[in-house]
Length: 249
Image (tube, rainbow, N blue to C red):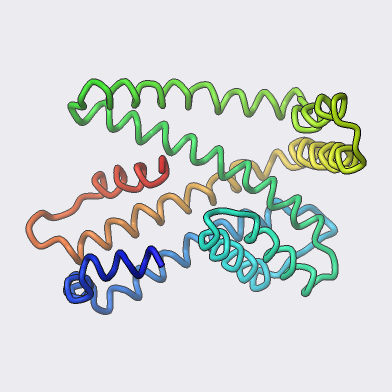
């Protein structure tokens, strides 16, 4: 309803005239979006350990379904349920694939932190920002410098903060579902930390795929600006800054 209201408020004619210069270039934008989905799908498959295997076609379909529903429901768990349903339909079991999703999300989060760090640095070095925005950028930069090493330390030291938080909760609230949550949290932590020990050689390739996701986003913004900008020619740096702002959002 909000989307319909926004379209009516802006005017269908104005939106159509704005999209007209894109023309067949819309297919290029769709292809770039597909590349982004492919990158994260391949990263997800690489996070799946033997003897489990997943065909790219099924993984890609589950990835697109989950992303679409997750966006539609404002990032609610509907996306994860759609992925689980798709995987159970194709394989009969989904737990190992869902663990792989959790591991891939860790790599993706790390890539976002590094992308935000580089974007914030470029913003501070290139533009003269108002004081509030400059202070916010510096705070973001410092936070990025803390989060990435902290995440590595948590995995390296095997800190069980997830199950530990449930244990603290269970001291006050004694319920069966809390105990089940503790057991599942411990299993997830063991699988994530075990992946780190057994697959260190894959770390760079998975992280590279996550960065391909961001680079394809920069290419998507650049392509869009190339079609719709009549007065000022876009640059890759401009596209990079805009994609950085989107990542912050």
